[in-house]
Figure (cartoon, rainbow, N blue to C red):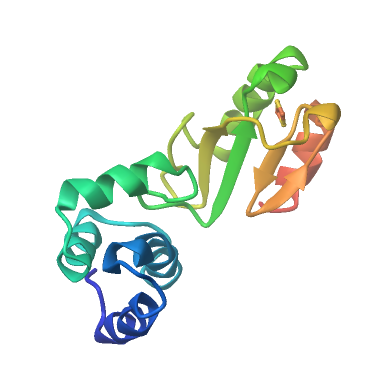
Length: 156
Ligand code: FES
């Protein structure tokens, strides 16, 4: 999928707000991810590089730095499991194993049916209610095996 004419027009307006054209790259990455399938493909990065007068590696450098930008196709539901210290100490490894088993998605990948993506996240600021995961943008906290099974059961 390539950058559409509609997005290019939108970005022409966007760059007028900034002293340098390249400053519009991050909002443009967000818009591309929203409009073009939920992830940033290599083709989109090349189109953005051309539009923002950057090298493709510069666009990749920005897109790959921020975990909110997805560089691979995502499942219908995305489960981001915190693996940082508070969650780790309170059992995030077991949560990750359980989520992978129940969804059929590999750790760091997408299930064969395209329904679930499982990814590991760094601290999400919910340490006092660890362990936690982010399911499609909604936090679920103080997780245990029963809670995980109930949450994922509603999605089956
Ligand atoms: S360590 Fe998991 S939310 Fe902070």
